[in-house]
Length: 465
Ligand code: PHE
Image (cartoon, rainbow, N blue to C red; front, side):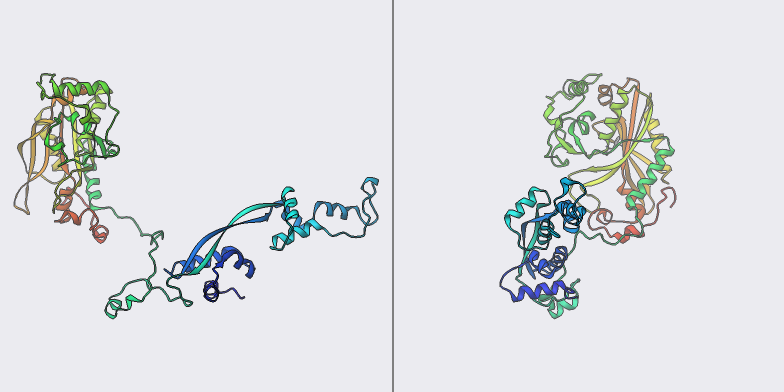
């Protein structure tokens, strides 16, 4: 019937009247549920500038459950009256029926109220006291013409087309607003990013070589674990703002293993364990500074400290996760990347063992021809860069970094003196780009990535060409 096109009716009503339309009155007037009017207003609001809407709240008396019961079935006193019957009650004290009929006043008042009729304030107060009605606040809306008002709703455009631009029709067209809350189309299945496919391969290789995975869920790390624990002096250039992202909130870490912290301080400032240290004034404030971890060796440091506390047992551990560096961005560098790191802790471990382990590791990736070059890390001695011959590029390319962790790092942790720890690390991005033939890192990671590349990317087997 009459309220088929409620949004249209509302537009016509506010077009004709000078007063704003009150949704509550309007619903009462049409004798329809207020929610329907609200729904219609909401649908009009989707058209930008069509209407202006203000919220108004109104107090109203609503029937309570008991009130509703009475409105439908009669009041308690009326029921009693009916029960007694025309001829009076059998019991003398109930013999109150003097008239043939009475009007159930209470029931009538309640019905009047619920239909929005006029009911005396005194009666309202009485009904309230008897808990047959209660005051409720209801939200309504006042609707006025908007800056872009029209009685006819033009169908909103969904896309801006080249045609609209050439004809200029975009200037007058109304566009549908983006609904950022919409659920979107359900993808038929998920797709792994190439980095995750290569990571899965690396994990498999580590597991097959008896490594277990370290916990890497800590992007924010204190300078203490990222640098100091690794015997990296506080004035080392890598620590200044050029390469490291410092976290401003919270800016400082406060919880450290106290004894260990003291030993780290001593080995930096005075030396010990056969080392002369760096001989400088080590500052707690510097160690407290929170950073986005710059390498996964921070993860290894925590794990090696834990290993020492739990009573040393030989261990092979690995991690693959994100690290962050404040670098100049170019085709091969982003401010974040993934590191793959392997750590081996054993008694009397030699450099030969380390070479043996990562040679096996790269062999399982299909890389056999390795060369090493001495390099410097503050936390390893000796340190070696690892190179592999790239058949496509016809040259030696650096594929990793490695070394034997220094006693200045291991002994303050409480590891036994005859325990050596070797480590090696590489990026996840480099092998992934080579595998997937991607030349610019921005095509692999970040906002410019083509999702189709991810959908279409083949699976990866590192040991097969
Ligand atoms: N942390 C080193 C890097 O960031 C890699 C590395 C790990 C070197 C373990 C030696 C031992 O390049």
